[in-house]
Length: 311
Ligand code: BDR
Ligand code: CA
Image 1 (cartoon, helix red, strand yellow):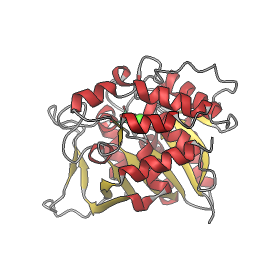
Image 2: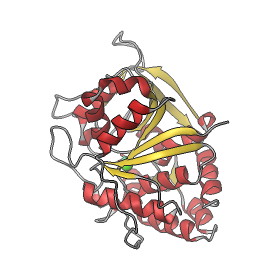
Image 3: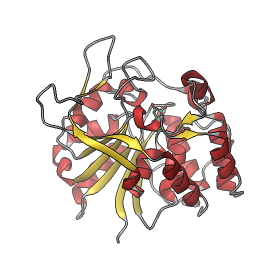
Image 4: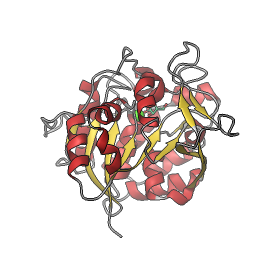
């Protein structure tokens, strides 16, 4: 089997960093063509540096990292330092990256790579959808070259920024609307899934027990990250969001869901950024997303620990 051509768009962010490590540890399955970064958990100046740092940690400093959009389409940037720390990678001090960010803009890279490719490319999105929306607006033809897009974002039931909205969608709801209405083969991994995949103390110990520099860094990041979340939601561990996207690409049998209609709320101030999932087909609209509902959390963690051991 040939490795899946993939671009990851992200805003590292601790859970983004773990997702990148999972992808970088899986070169036989994923042909990672590049990483584009966006403003989200922390400003763009930090997300781009953090992506470089994680590539170096994984022993892949040559992997091209591109900086994309520094702010959402219409709204001011909202960040999440309270979850990821002021650097975005709280818990570990990384050396300054030896490689520089690519000179090309992240959106230009997306358009160029998708336009030139012979084989459609999969997109994994782990942050606000600004870069993907701008690329689709600038060059709509790229939609035909996107094999599928797997999005971490949204919520079927309750949000985490407001009762209605999840962070990635709330930060740039207009961008999300563009992406969800682009007719793409879109898979949605929402909070309802990621809240089933918890970083319990036992799982954290398993990562630590790998006893490598990468596992030590991953464990320190995860130990800091989400302690507030675990407390807030009364869960035995922090929800592990973004790695679920990569786990889905590597092991789709661990996930199950349904083709459903998902619309993005962009007008209401109370429910701005809500992903309205039409579970009972009340809109009469055709499905535009494969909405994941269930996940084998032990399977995801086994996969993650297995792959981290390879780095
Ligand atoms: C999402 O928001 C960010 O804080 C995380 O990195 C994840 O992508 C979860 O709501
Ligand atoms: Ca993220």
